[in-house]
Length: 282
Image (cartoon, rainbow, N blue to C red; front, side, top):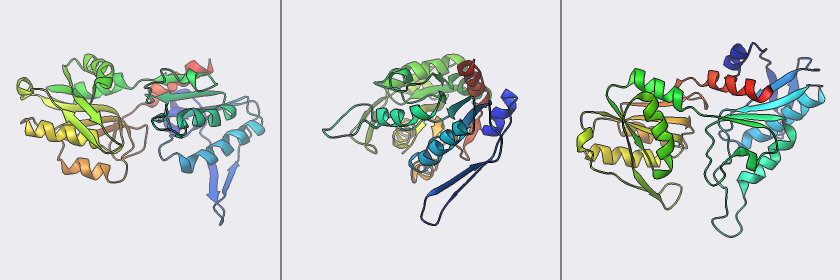
């Protein structure tokens, strides 16, 4: 992703030296003179706990070496889930993570963060940010790669997003009714799909983590006599065993953007991110 962004922006790609000492502490080094330069750190934040300290070390080192500015390009932004206390004593990690990152960066660019009760990153981050949306790129891929599609949204919260993708792809959409009782306990109610039997169902979601919602939706579509589904996620997190579970349902295809590196990456969003970087740095 960093190489693609450097190409789009006419920038220089700088490699870093990062390793662990025997006691587990992080060593970080840059070999370039950064004095007076605008620097963008590219770090997608899936599995974030192992990445955050090296990222903070990198950001502060870049600043100490005289960079004019340091921004963070994080195609997938972590710690957006816990935006309220569902049970007493819970940490508001959404806000804590933002307060941890903000002092180290001058701007932030990301794609389709999980905004729910927080409606804008400006509510929690203290730096200018650009939130980009992958719906147009996904819509183009569907229009080009899927014959006679009908889009399926996993829950009512996805309605606006799925509608946007469906409009861009020039197709219809259906939204399912999802209820959750935990991270891996999901129930999906599906409407009568008789009129869509000749279509290819395309399940679209912003994040594929445990894959539970998609698995449940695929079971219902199969039981309804639908064709094998194409499963699309903006961010393919694929928690332990999720990808294998999805494959066991024999989907037509599983597709993600390249926000998180995975073998399912088929939709490039580097041009989208590059446009956002230009805006936030202007």
